[in-house]
Amino acid sequence: MSCERSTKHGIVMWMSGCSGYFECHGRKQEVEESPGNIRLRVTLTFLAIMNRLVPYLLFSSFCILCCPAAVFSAQPSSVDASNVLFLISDDMNCRLGCYGDPIAKTPNLDRLASMGVKFDRAYCQQPLCNCTRSSVLSGKYPTTTGVLDNNTWLVMKDGEKILPRYFEQHGYAAAEFGKIWHGANNGEPRSAAQPAAKGKGKGKGRAVAGWFTPDQRAEQQRTQPDYWETVHSPYRNNPPDPTKYAWANEFGPLTDDKPEADTVIADQAVAQLKAFAEQKKPFFLSVGFHKPHVPLKCPKEFFDLYDAASLPLPPDFANEPTGPNDTPPDELRQNIDLFTARRFSEDEARAALQAYYACVSYMDAQVGRVLDALEQNGLRDNTIIVFWGDHGWHLSDKGMWAKGTLFETSARGPLIIADPRQKTAGLPSARTVEYVSMFPTLVELCGIAKPGWLEGESLVPLLKNPQAEWNHPAFTVQPRHWFIGRSLRNERWRYTEWDEGRRGNELYDHDNDPHEMHNLAKDPAQKEIVAQFQQQLRDSRVGQSMRRE
Ligand SMILES: [Ca+2]
Image (cartoon, rainbow, N blue to C red; front, side):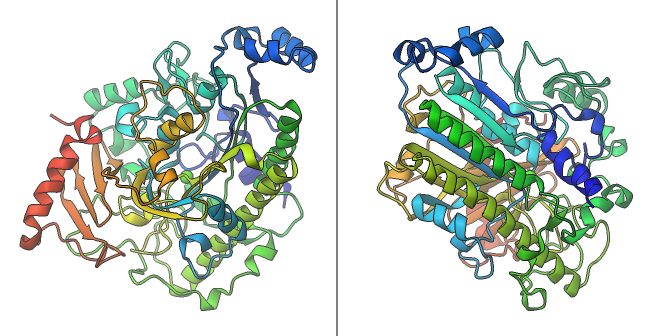
């Protein structure tokens, strides 16, 4: 099909820069961008115009005529000429060849890992598209942005910039293809973001039905404490409606020759790299792939890489959401992505695993095309490459096919940073790092001043020495209804509290229990370490913000 299939799950998703899915799926009226809407924003600095007046005369004139505000708001600065290639995958966990998975066929991500530092313990700050992307792009924790679900806007304070816009402000050309954001969200400054609860959106960051500002969410929490009892949100732990997710449950090889969205996105990125090479100007290129997000469909050749019947199931496999002993009930969530609100068999799980791996390999192939284009255009030696999945994903472990839990599989994701100037290519780092650190890392690598609102720690010391001393745990949060689950991860332990402990806590020893099958929070032998983590969590930035009275 597919025109219908492509339109529904491919191009529309790509158009919106959003999976359009779950809480916004199917609302075509909410789509803000149009196909082929290449979001190229070029800001020429005064310095660049003077230095390269002749070759850029025509292009500068075009920009001045078409985008006077952007041109004149540019703030020339001293810019290191390092380019940035920012690659994102959607709903990808660490089942990759370079992360030690014996099944996954990911030659291109393996190649990228050999070019840089692979972070083996990298964690998103909230395992849900809108929240983790808003965190990375703003440089703030979700408990600071207040973006804690898939229908809340990121609203930056006036004067603050999201990551690619900050690079533009410092003389970079920027372009974005595919799913960078979730939905129409794009990090408008407060003065420009005026979303309303009702009305059709036209222009990003403005009125779109069903979306709210963080301030509006806070008001709802105060005045409508039973709001999530009546508004559908599986991530806030409302019962799922199976009829809404039939499209997500479909998986298998594509049966037509229509290009998948990620193929088109890679095409655009390849063309843009060629254009950037000809411009000879620093660039920040963001490329967001959709796979392996559901529906798990891709060309048959990628399914042929895997034999479903021989795929092993995880040791904590279960036929429906099932936690270890004493799991706080809020930790588990119902499945909606696959096997919506029903049990599944081992054979069904193996078939879905094959589809997941196939989509990973398909996306890997698109990454390979972009890496090849970087090489072919002579940009490899002066381009920093970042690859990250927006969060992890359960693959039948604990009976879930989902993100949105605070278990390791959901909170952990791939992160690879390749800086050609470093001498650490191919080395792994075992330190616990956070996705919110990407913003401060990139500005430091590129010689740009670190803005004051960033909350993450720069990873540059670990790029220089992946085994350097590092005393920063990783924090991940996930709300249920109006309360928040908060989790702390260091190199050995994961400690989690729901509603500041009122609704239970969890402690897992990863040295002895890598699949988190034994909750030790109530083990008398761990009393001291629980108290230590409890204090550390509550003293942290995510523990101090959005506290309940
Ligand atoms: Ca995602």
